[in-house]
Length: 146
Image (cartoon, rainbow, N blue to C red):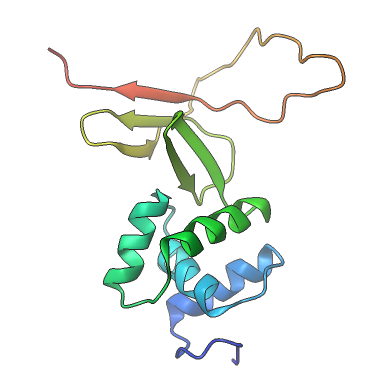
């Protein structure tokens, strides 16, 4: 398989390239490198831009933090990821794109999937005129008992 990337294609990169193709994104070197870190092992991830930047540095990839932010935004715009805003200053990016709730672990700052069995969201207000509800995010904040 050939790509416009100068890096050797590994199974993780192959999976990343296929993931990018599913979103209609061109496989640039930076996108492939970040996609391989996100989906290369087939597991879902919750990352911040900063944690993905650190992982890319540890993997020996040469990408800037600004490139990581821009690439995560492109992945979201292509429908490959969803952004989960925990508070006004912290966003996580989730490779699992179906609707599901999350746990936010206040002590560690980690975001994980929460079970949705039996969960119901009822009684939402009507959307304002000319709009529709696009999505409802459920983030359940957890902390150790005192």
